[in-house]
Image 1 (cartoon, rainbow, N blue to C red):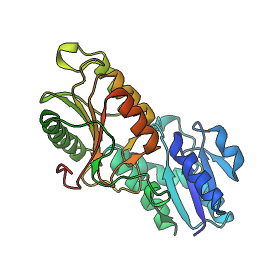
Image 2: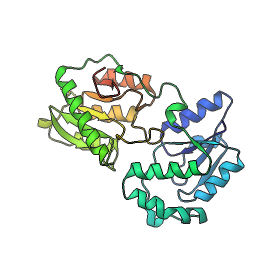
Image 3: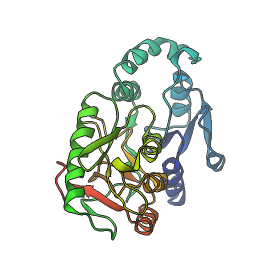
Amino acid sequence: MSLALIAGQGDVPRMIAEHHKDAGNAPFIIVLKGFESDWVRGFDHEVCGIAEIGKVLSTLRAKGCDTVSFIGNVKRPDFSSLKPDLKGVSLLPKIISAARRGDDALLNSIVAIFESEGFKVIGAHELLDGLTQPAGVLNSVAVSDSEKADIQEAYRIAGAIGELDIGQGAVVCGGLVLAVEAQEGTDEMLRRIARLPVEIRGTEDERKGVLLKRPKPMQDKRVDMPTIGPSTVLKAAEAGLKVIAAVEHAALWVEVEKLKSLADADGLSLVSLRGNGDWP
């Protein structure tokens, strides 16, 4: 396998790149213009515009890459402002059409382009052990029966918005849906929760409520897997939540030992549900 990472922002691209470099198999990095990070300077890389598809493909072939992984956060672009190359011009109408149906359709169309060009596409979780977690309570903070009920309701709601290709996360407190995730992302959703009246949410002194993230029901798990990182725990704590939950081997728990330490310190439970949403 000759690996290339098509990298957005966040810690996961760096972690995977450094892991493979330490193992003697440093990946080539395609850095998307506008999403550059300092760590890529230590790797062979090329900066490409998000619509420079021809440049990306030709560069990957020139570097001998046969496997690619799309990793990191990339905000949905303003398609009218993109500057495609010739290959991008031919493919952009198809991509824009898919984007109108939602993020899942957009990502699937991009994966299909690379597969049709002969590249194998793999997920971040296949490149670094420990990014996903088995079913269980991951840290030392216990979960009450009422919180388990909120988890199940949040699982149902997140599945419903996923069916509509809206988002991957939901927040439920005392049976009340406080928020669902859309284009703003998890961190902004949690900031909204922190601004809600304390009568309907938890506080840092009396934690209540659940954040649950799960893949969309028809999602290709090789791209855009739900991610829970240190900022998720910190913002959930600021919002007064008690539980952060995901599904076994269907979420990226970034720096999981750090997550456990942060959650224990703030009194949050970290839970990985069974694949069908059942309590572990």
